[in-house]
Image (tube, helix red, strand yellow):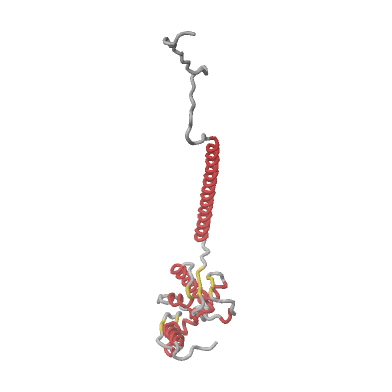
Length: 237
């Protein structure tokens, strides 16, 4: 993998990162002494006090530093970001802001990449950005690898279970409301069909609308009889 070209933004970014992490390279965790540069660090390593401390150092001390480094790293990741994703190198820069943190050069990990891979293999963090590539070619310093904390604590598992139960309960309640609404709509349609049928029956049996003529007659069926008057001036035959 080729390096960044001189003068490019990537080149300057790497230089700034190296400058920011330079003091960490020259810090002696055993003696808790910060050296200014590489020459000072070499001189410190040759000092009698440092050699005496190194002679007293045991493998379990390295394991203790490693355990504390990992524990502090994961604790800050959980507190600061929870289970959200964050770029691995960016978070490491956040972690080393604490001047009292255990330095990586005192642990059994010689690079951030190996440490992040260790966390991923042990199931303590989830790795993102591998894209099916060779894990041996992984380089965290490139800024393409993201991590997120895996909270497998009892409290978190109980909280997740309660959230799932709440979601299922809300889903069931919503289903019941939908069923009730559908039933009401179906009942409304049935009632509307019944009313329409009754209206049609009433229209069929109704009297015709229009002018009505009535003929009235006297009882008995006989008309009025007019009595003929006698003419007194006419002589009888």
